[in-house]
Length: 274
Image (cartoon, rainbow, N blue to C red):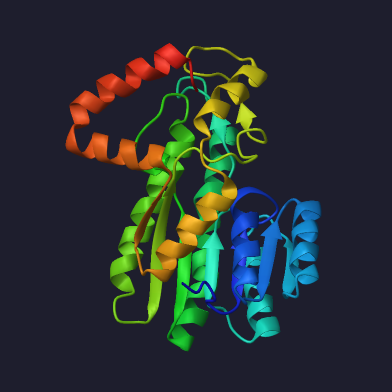
């Protein structure tokens, strides 16, 4: 199965799923633009790609900056002679309760996790429509399917991405451009370690405890997640669920919604997760 979709642009490519996708795309023959606020991370990844004979560009990029995203995608298109794949993957986390959450924290997360996806999509879409081909890969989450205590802002953003993706899916019918809605479960990345942690569902403000509570749930590696995503894109799948935990939760909550809420709520209290 080939993962060469032509020139690619990946946000959040300095680590985690984004980095793994960029490297796997390059290995399949795609020239890749790596974008991240973490400039060191993308430069290291780009050097690895180039050492293996691939082509890479890097952009230090804050995806909440619409003009910067537009410029980076356009520069990639000009440098590589097109753009066949964009992964809007950059994301952050916020742990807090609705009753105590600061508006500034909520807006910070939404600007990156939701508006960053919109910016990347709107930057690449006109170019892809003109070409008559392309893949838009927008990262939602298992938390774009279920709700989780102390993760209301993250869940709100990821549910918004899910709805945005589904609407776009119908708009793109017959254009040759496809949208793929990605829903990973627990993946062992830096997103929680680099997030803002105010208080968990128990009211605990210990950041280290909040970070460590996630670790046992991160059962999928970034490389595994990237392989599942790219295989799903190659297969033409619209909705791509990543990880056995995500597949289990997705089915359980759809088929037994009331039982799921009882089961999940008790499980969160027992594990003191989030």
